[in-house]
Amino acid sequence: MNKFAFSKTNYILLVIGLAVIVLGFILMSGSGTTEEAFNPEIFNDTRIKVAPMVSLFGFIFVIVAILWPAKKD
Image (tube, rainbow, N blue to C red):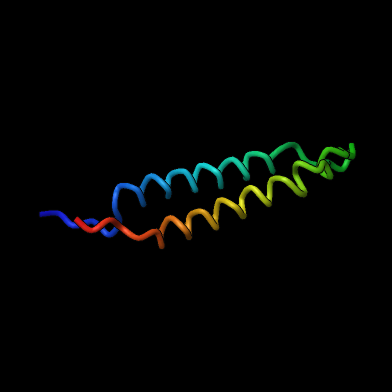
């Protein structure tokens, strides 16, 4: 009998948390400023405020997913 460290619910929650983290990093990405041209979009509210909070929420969600108690069969 195979015993896994986590239950199916834990793995589903882990995948959701990782997807939220990836979403946060995607929101942070974009073109930067070069020496020739200044890009004011690097100071966009989405990049500075929203995306780090989304990523932080994802990391907290992953911690909760790891600590989520498994059902006893």
